Length: 388
Image (cartoon, rainbow, N blue to C red; front, side, top):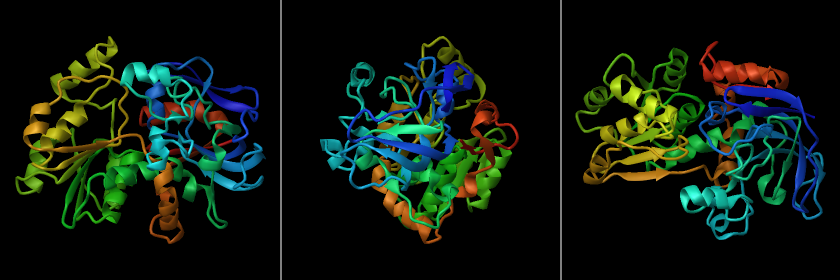
């Protein structure tokens, strides 16, 4: 089969690789009909996530048709059309029982690697390094899905791929980011980053009752898409974001702040140069400019929500501000299984059409070009769907 393979920093190639096979009785094989390039895939593309190996198949946002089932999978049939959450969950461990499926105890066969860095391991993730399981991803013609009785969600007839594909990751990620803010009537929510996750975060904040959402970015097409979602927008290249947020909130600050950027934030001035230099020589793994700014901007007693991916260690954090202002932090990889059914209902009821975020549709063979334009924000690119 054809698959998108990581070969090094800024080097992805479409190669011919062996077809996946059933390994475990709870496995399934899915013929992929749609897949996507995620913003967090760019952290792999740019070489910031450790334990990648040459030839690893990328991709964790994918859906398709079931073509083979292990003997223990009884709730799905061959021919069913399914979406697959990006965290891999066993369904039976303590964390899965608590609906914290991105923390599954049993789905990462390389948990010992993550434990060295983090103390404990999160779940395995499709196509996202050997530290998180070494699983082949879904930017391919076929994929093996372990724990398929838990990880395959059948899609009702009448819904197009593009309406449901993002239930695998970015829609639940944006929704959980907003839910973590404990939004109350009248709240003002500030969102840093208007990429795909940021766009779903904005819409989710309104769905959950925010009165105002203020979106921060510098890419014109992303700011325009945020405006189209009713958000007020700030271009961080044109003004002091902290001062602007104070002015827009009567001096109090946003009730909640959301970092939808993560470890590759673009800082301005000396701070930005400091982070880039330290990251380049691996004295700092992540660039936390947005996180610093969000902590300082948040009102006293407010909430900091972090859906943006961080991979290791950061410094120069304003923990004094966080502690003395009494901030609450909520973060983590998304518990997609918890949200998928309820968000599917929103799609079926016409309350949201997730396809609004798509700007590019490419054949799988053009994935390297897709990575390049997405990474460099060319051609007004916000979200790419690949078609095997």
